Length: 622
Image (cartoon, rainbow, N blue to C red; front, side):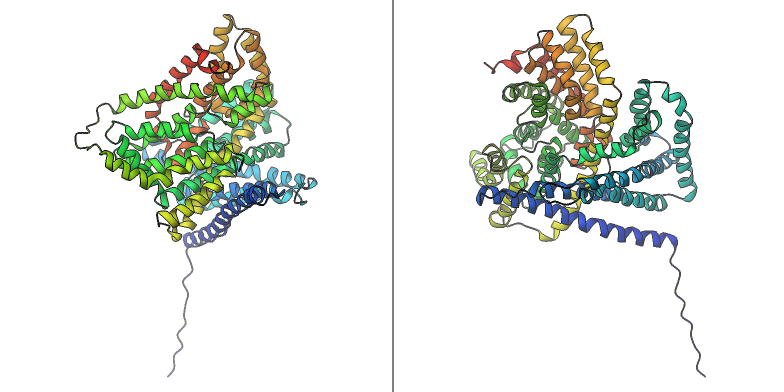
């Protein structure tokens, strides 16, 4: 007798469905993001080659690169959110009980979810509004570029929902959502009261709400975004699509395209063996000195600063090269990221700094004079940082470390020469006009590939795809912070706060000395909130005439202002630059919080010296 067997297929569990959807979504985002990195390299390299070799400029290359860049930034931000790689401060969260910590970790997913729900609609409106603009070179609608914002926001919204389902039980997820909704409800209910507070709302949203979000472990970019959207929605009649436009403006600045390309270049230097060759040589020179490679880090940031026009890109070129060897020699990750962030602030005045160029253009101060005046202040701050390095490493036991012989140093120099030539090749290309600060990274990439293949004979093709995806993720995390900070800066400009602040400072008693001291304090705070360029555009035209009336040399004042903003930019808990340093070095922000205090004190001491001795800024002008 034949019997029929019924085959039953097990129903997939909800969690397995979520994992499957998440994996499909990852592939749909990661592969295009990796291809976009390659496309950016190809487009910019084609522009350089066509202009310099063939003498026929490609008029569309920058336009296409800018269009692809916004998509790269948004898809990278999606990958970073899925991987949990957006920068967040968890110093206080880590000190709470396990139950509270688990709850706040879910809140750190629920809060971005709230922001993304707020931004999707305005982002769609913004993309539609851009349809009236036709790109001059390519002749296509700008909606194709602007569509990256709503598409990226929708994908991040899907990723946040999937993470919420995967990382928590349903009671905790509902509790976190209820907590975020309750805070939002309080602000909405207080709307009529907030509208009567005037500029006191700046404290409520940009100090109170930002601090609450940041200290609760909400990623920095989403903390800034929530505060900006809340302020504009509840206290003004500004269409929210306008602030999406400001975020787009912040993220799509062409000079920032150097960030992902220098991130990729840093990974190539490590993968091809160039990093090992350089570190081996530098270690033979300074390996017997206490804290030797820390001095190398300070010097290296001084040398490469300004090549890319972006501090994040400068750090991305240095950290992957030096950090592995420094860790192997016993350096603590927190001290490494603290020193990297401090050197970012130290080198703000090194030409050709984009901040210097912006300041000259909005204030009328000679850019060549600013370039000349910016070299010595950076050296003064380098000396103060090196004094902290000496103090921290003075007790290191180097009894087991053998000093390299001259023959060993020479041999390692010969091996390292092709790698050591890279910074000089990059700077030569910029100075000679072969490539712009944005394009020059592609020359570095080609040089690194050829050096790895032909000289060091080390090139792991299997690592290229993961490196491209990592580049997109890291770049998205950095650029979303910059975009959110730009939106916040624009909201501050609309409040009239800048004019009121300038008037108050001009009325201070005590003359030039008091004004200079007040400027340092104000620009440290502004640097942490606005970043350098938005703060310069906003306050430069207001403050420089006051400084001139008080008899302060404009170049001297410019150096003090830029260094003050640099200190604020790289000082936690609010400094965006500090989180960029953490993202680039892949070190958790909490680890650098304590070590950076000493370096920040050193920077402030150096800043005071620069402010007190005008000759440091003006001595080479005549």
